[in-house]
Length: 246
Image 1 (tube, rainbow, N blue to C red):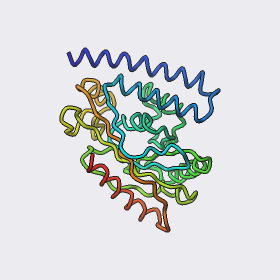
Image 2 (cartoon, helix red, strand yellow):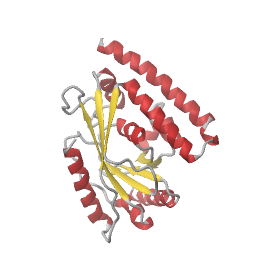
Image 3 (tube, helix red, strand yellow):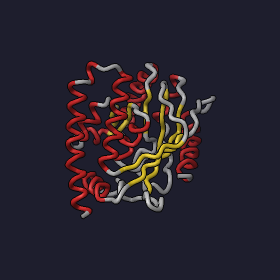
């Protein structure tokens, strides 16, 4: 029965993705940025429902830029969950832009891609982020630089925080967690770590009896004289504290 349910969810998800691509190509060019954000939020919430994922939001949602959102990173599902709560322009590894079908959606949403192994590319992305923040946009990054297992928060890389320092934009710490709806135990279904492939992680999520996605917002903070490394350490501790309470 789980496989049949997963197949049904997969079919509905594919149709929804194709619908999203149609919207991006036909409707987005005529929309304002605010309208695009609303469409992304509603599309993402609908997709979570198709996947059997329930969204739980804690803390105040800040939907006005300029704002840099920093979060722990667990799964391919993270961007979808965060967009269902608070649409943002994400910074993502370049590989994500080449994912089958999903890559087209990620590119169409205005994602900024980074070659994480290339330090010079980080500076290019910092400049792009700064431009978006000056335009009062919301930009989101995963400063761990990789996905974790949801049981802790890895140290934050500091490079991308330079965009917030240069523009004076506040940073919002956010923690993500995935739980079993029945007993709130950690759910491993959406994990995307180690040798796990994207397709196998998606299939595990589709087969799950349900997944509770928790998004916990902290308070926006400014640099207040901290350099990017000190600020990264402080933000990592805040996100780790938020994650521990999920």
